[in-house]
Image 1 (cartoon, rainbow, N blue to C red):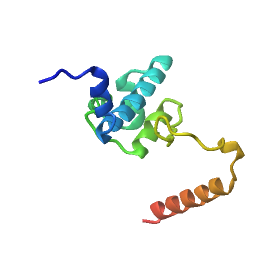
Image 2: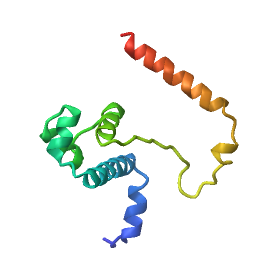
Image 3: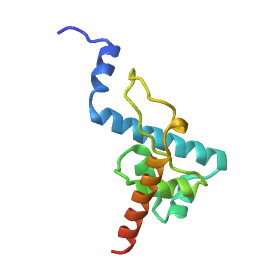
Image 4: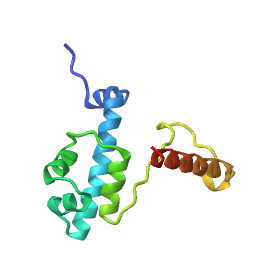
Length: 124
């Protein structure tokens, strides 16, 4: 059996959704940890702030739990942060014009969609 280089293994892994899910979890928890360190907040205090157990917070940091955008927002707000989710093109693909040059129509439609989702969620 031929040895595979690390680079070829990494390229293969990057083709799988599981790699990108793991990367997103890692990036999110790293950002949380950085905010915790900056503010001197430990896991027990973070758990108290979000109304969860310290064990849950530990599971999140280990990547052992699947969390929602709602819980991600709660974590961020508990540390006086803000959740930002970005979708971009794959590596090596050309980007379009900067968002500042694009029509605000898309943004306005996005706000309308978000408002509708919030109304539907609270009317249940």
